[in-house]
Every structure is written in C-alpha cells, then in structure tokens.
Length: 327
Image: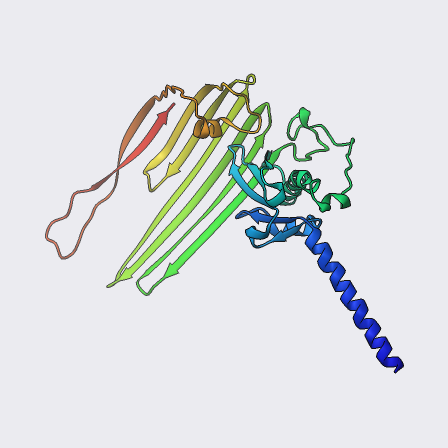
C-alpha cells in the first residue's frame, strides 16, 4: 500500500512537470528562421528565450536573413522581421556589415547580437519580454577610429593573408598528365586605403607513349599583381594597378601592365569599395577608359622536323616570342 502511494505521487509530479514545461513552451514567442547560410544551429543555441519553429504558419515572427559580399572581402547582412498574429503589421529591417578581418566566430556572434536586438521589440509585446534583462556595456570600444587601426582591436593591423594550392593527376597506359598550382595573397583594407598584392604559379605536364613515340609537353606560368587605392576624401579616391605575367601557354616571355584610376562617388560609404559601388549603384555615370600598349616580337628558331619515311626534310620551325608592355 505504501509503495502504491509513492508511485501515484510520482505520476502526479511528472504530469505537473510536463504540464508546466508545455505551458512555458506555449507562452514563448515562436520565430520562423528563413535563410540558406546564417549559422542556424548557432542562433538556436544562443537565443534560447524564443522557440524556433519549422512551420512558418504557427510562428509569431518571421525572420529572413540575407547577405551580400562587399568589395572589401566582407559581407553586408539584412535582417527582415515580419510580425504575425497579434503582432501583424510590426515589420522591421536591420542592416549591418562585417569586414574581412573578422573570423567566422566573430561574425556569427555579431549576427546573433543583431538578431537578439531585432527580436526585443516583438518580445516586449508578448509574454517573453517578462524574462528579458536589458543591459549595456559602456566599455565598448568605439569604431570611429577605423577598422583595424586599433592594435588591441586587431593585432594583425587589418592584414588578411590567403594561401592556396592544388594538384591534379591522371594516368592511362599511353597518356599521363598532371598539373599543380600555388597562390598567395596579402590584403589590407582600412577607411584610408586598400592595398593588395598576390602571386601565382602553375605547372602542367603531359606525357604520351604510343607506337614507340614518346613525347612530353610542359607548360609553366607565373604571374603577380598589386594595387593600391587611397581615399582622398569621403567622395574622391585614386589608385594604381600593376600586373606581370610569364606564360608558356599564352606565349609570353614577359607581359607587364600598369594603370591608374580616379573615382568620384556621390554617396560616401565606408563599408564598401569602389568595385561594389560600380556594380550596384543606380546612379548613371560615364567612365573614360584609357589604355596604351607597345608589343615587341622576337623570332627564334627552335629546330627542324625530320621523318625517316619521308624523302624530304621539312623547313625549320619558327617560334614567335612576344613581349608586351601596356599601361
């Protein structure tokens, strides 16, 4: 009899606990998250005071997250909040940008913070707002000094380095091929200027072995480029670009190019670069491209073709090596 009372008490306590949990879950604000790549799992684990649902027809707020790459290597996010049910008509949009020097962890932390700030307005109109505590941090470092200009903010001083390499190989009985390449890039983006320098090298080799004829073909190429863009004011910027290449495939002993540019922007925007404005600006503008080149050609004998089964000897082959200088 005593054991039966204990079991009945345990069942009653379990039912009460499940009931309270279901009540709490029902009272929490429901959010439907619509995005393709926005750190969904991270947002769900960090924002625990709302319920993220899979069905948008039962949600109280719909959140659509989109992002667009900027010319500086960062991303511009747009958060579109749409209120539903009792909060219908409460719509809001938040835009913010992250830069190239920030890691994925830093970017997702900023995204989670912006999502929380956008949801506070809706939580205040629901029972979820009763569990929130609003606070501020007055020690937050000001961003007016410029991205990466504070050593404590970025010990790399806004420099971003990228390394890349690739190798591909294939082989058959009569044919083997392989190619590989490597690249390196260093880039610094600040409010005052943008500087980038990069270099690449590629190697390709093909071998044929058929009917006693062995042939090997090798192609090499190397190239390097650098550019510097300086902000003269909120609207004016000027820059220079240089490029050099040596390529067997393109038949370049040496190709060099030097160019410059000056640009005026009607609307200043410190989170973007001239490349992004050219692509997305709705203002009409006229550009005056200028190019000057001076090709140099040099003829060089590379040998003769001779086959035993032919009576005559073919004339020597001529290789044209091209050197171009443009600006």
